[in-house]
Image (cartoon, rainbow, N blue to C red; front, side, top):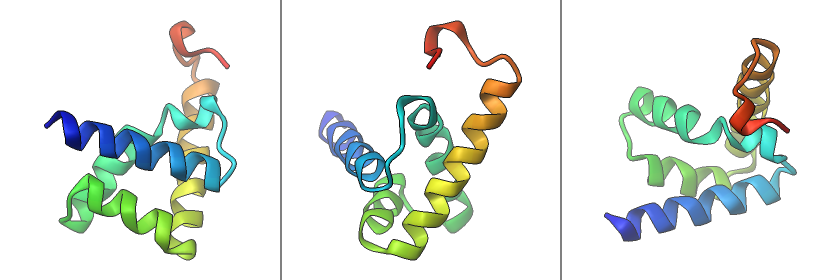
Length: 83
Protein backbone atom coordinates (compact mmCIF):
# COMPACT_ATOMS: atom_id res chain seq x y z
CA UNK A 1 0.00 0.00 0.00
CA UNK A 2 2.77 2.47 0.89
CA UNK A 3 4.57 1.49 -2.30
CA UNK A 4 1.42 2.31 -4.28
CA UNK A 5 1.20 5.71 -2.59
CA UNK A 6 4.86 6.40 -3.32
CA UNK A 7 4.39 5.40 -6.96
CA UNK A 8 1.29 7.58 -7.26
CA UNK A 9 3.07 10.57 -5.72
CA UNK A 10 5.97 10.06 -8.12
CA UNK A 11 3.56 9.92 -11.07
CA UNK A 12 1.75 13.08 -9.92
CA UNK A 13 5.08 14.91 -9.62
CA UNK A 14 6.14 13.73 -13.07
CA UNK A 15 2.75 14.72 -14.50
CA UNK A 16 2.86 18.16 -12.86
CA UNK A 17 6.36 18.87 -14.16
CA UNK A 18 5.58 17.50 -17.62
CA UNK A 19 2.55 19.80 -17.98
CA UNK A 20 3.87 22.78 -16.01
CA UNK A 21 1.29 22.61 -13.22
CA UNK A 22 1.86 24.75 -10.16
CA UNK A 23 1.00 23.88 -6.55
CA UNK A 24 -2.39 25.58 -6.79
CA UNK A 25 -3.35 23.16 -9.56
CA UNK A 26 -1.58 20.07 -8.21
CA UNK A 27 -3.89 20.13 -5.21
CA UNK A 28 -6.71 18.97 -7.51
CA UNK A 29 -4.89 15.93 -8.89
CA UNK A 30 -5.80 13.26 -6.30
CA UNK A 31 -9.55 13.90 -6.45
CA UNK A 32 -9.57 14.44 -10.21
CA UNK A 33 -7.63 11.26 -10.95
CA UNK A 34 -9.66 9.22 -8.47
CA UNK A 35 -12.93 10.28 -10.07
CA UNK A 36 -11.67 9.79 -13.64
CA UNK A 37 -10.22 6.36 -12.81
CA UNK A 38 -13.58 5.26 -11.42
CA UNK A 39 -15.37 6.51 -14.53
CA UNK A 40 -12.88 4.63 -16.73
CA UNK A 41 -12.95 1.51 -14.52
CA UNK A 42 -9.19 1.46 -13.99
CA UNK A 43 -6.85 2.03 -11.09
CA UNK A 44 -5.70 5.53 -10.30
CA UNK A 45 -2.09 4.43 -10.83
CA UNK A 46 -2.92 3.03 -14.27
CA UNK A 47 -4.58 6.31 -15.24
CA UNK A 48 -1.65 8.34 -13.92
CA UNK A 49 0.80 6.17 -15.87
CA UNK A 50 -1.23 6.65 -19.05
CA UNK A 51 -1.35 10.43 -18.64
CA UNK A 52 2.44 10.57 -18.41
CA UNK A 53 2.82 8.45 -21.57
CA UNK A 54 -0.12 9.67 -23.67
CA UNK A 55 0.23 13.34 -24.61
CA UNK A 56 -3.43 13.84 -25.60
CA UNK A 57 -4.72 12.27 -22.40
CA UNK A 58 -2.14 14.14 -20.33
CA UNK A 59 -3.07 17.48 -21.87
CA UNK A 60 -6.75 16.79 -21.28
CA UNK A 61 -6.21 15.86 -17.63
CA UNK A 62 -3.95 18.89 -17.11
CA UNK A 63 -6.68 21.12 -18.55
CA UNK A 64 -9.28 19.51 -16.27
CA UNK A 65 -7.00 19.94 -13.25
CA UNK A 66 -6.60 23.60 -14.12
CA UNK A 67 -10.38 24.06 -14.36
CA UNK A 68 -11.11 22.18 -11.13
CA UNK A 69 -8.45 24.08 -9.21
CA UNK A 70 -9.62 27.44 -10.61
CA UNK A 71 -13.11 26.68 -9.34
CA UNK A 72 -11.72 25.60 -5.98
CA UNK A 73 -9.81 28.86 -5.55
CA UNK A 74 -12.66 31.00 -6.92
CA UNK A 75 -14.94 29.54 -4.27
CA UNK A 76 -12.62 30.50 -1.44
CA UNK A 77 -10.33 27.49 -1.51
CA UNK A 78 -8.78 26.51 1.77
CA UNK A 79 -6.31 28.78 3.55
CA UNK A 80 -4.16 25.73 4.24
CA UNK A 81 -3.52 25.44 0.49
CA UNK A 82 -3.25 29.10 -0.55
CA UNK A 83 -1.03 29.65 -3.60
